[in-house]
Length: 113
Image (cartoon, rainbow, N blue to C red; front, side, top):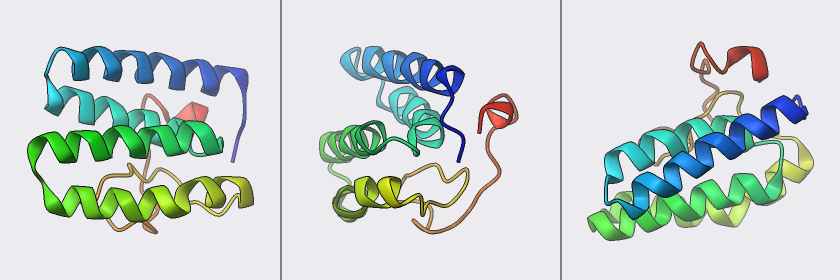
């Protein structure tokens, strides 16, 4: 999994936009941006875990038990799997997809991952 400065900068951009959308109460947009940040942040334990933490918060605000439960499991394992480098390429991180399923990354992110 590539750990490049360009990928890290792209993660920071998506994460900042997700924070703004979350604060503005646009949970759908925040989640969409967090999925993109997740794809980019997987190689770094802190960044990877942060995306799951934010997805958990959105699940909580939506009162979405499936998302909350899924994110609790992902929070427990995600950071360690980042350290071990055992992550499914392109996975968007939401509870709506299996945690171990590789996925094609969004076309604009593909060169970075």
